[in-house]
Length: 177
Image (cartoon, rainbow, N blue to C red; front, top):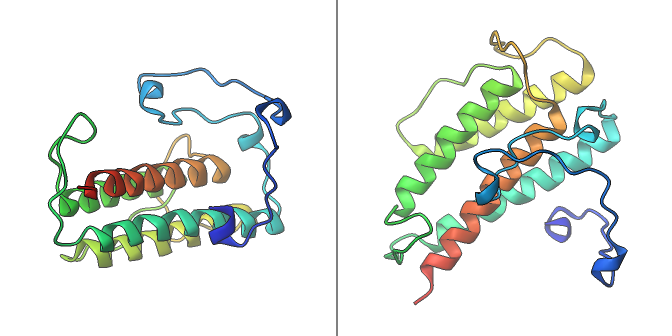
């Protein structure tokens, strides 16, 4: 994702080069990789330069999902324990519904729905980015919602990117013969 986002990243040569700075508690979705809680670092304020980096990574994750969905068009996806028999169209709808929920958790109401899920997904992403920028700049949120404990911008980005990538990879895995 870093390469696709044009964000500098140098992974450590071995696992010994990884420094674990926090171990958040797991929840019911942890077994499936769901980042169910934010970390202390994600609750810190976001500088504008850091937001640009986060948005680039998020957009790269979204682009990965979109590319996988395009590549799976007309393909009969294999069935199995991962996602069962969910079709490409149902998976796009599922990702859209999740993004709508994530936008609400960030503090904004969804844009007006359209019947085309792919168009609706683009509109929700645009609203998500506008809300992220407003939150970081301390400006009023576009189309605000009464969210009692909104997600931090960093956590919202991580959650959305994770979900998009998870389903991009699922589409890729299940499109294989």
